[in-house]
Amino acid sequence: PEAAGAPTVLGPQLCLDESGNIVLNQSSLSKSLEQDNLIQDTGPVQEAVSEYKSAYRQTPPSKWRDEETAMFYKALSLYGTDLFLVQTMFKDKSAAQIKSKFMKEQRRNPQYVDEALRA
Image (cartoon, one colour):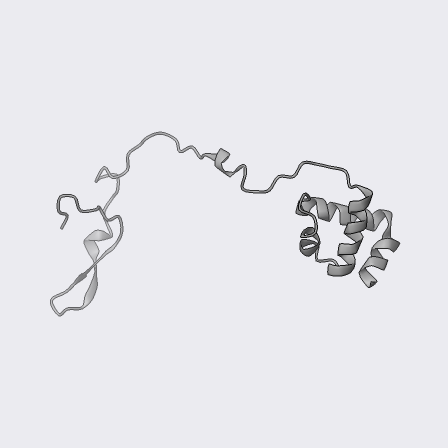
């Protein structure tokens, strides 16, 4: 029973039978939300996508300096192909930039990459 000020419950309800057993209240399964005017049609649902723009770290595109490339090879020799750990040495580079650098260096300088991975 709903009293004044009591919250409206929108789901199946449990109750006790004469023996004290917990049973499902069958009448709570057939309630229609539209019949009780619990759902109000306020128009189409709009999501606020702008709240999620900053969810992922955005790094501006930048060229790799010679010092950063040397540091990249040092990170490869320390961490191997675990690019997530390699990324920890670069605060201003995203994971995508690290992966792109690795793929590019593998194509352009495979001997340096192999040397760094064996060290």
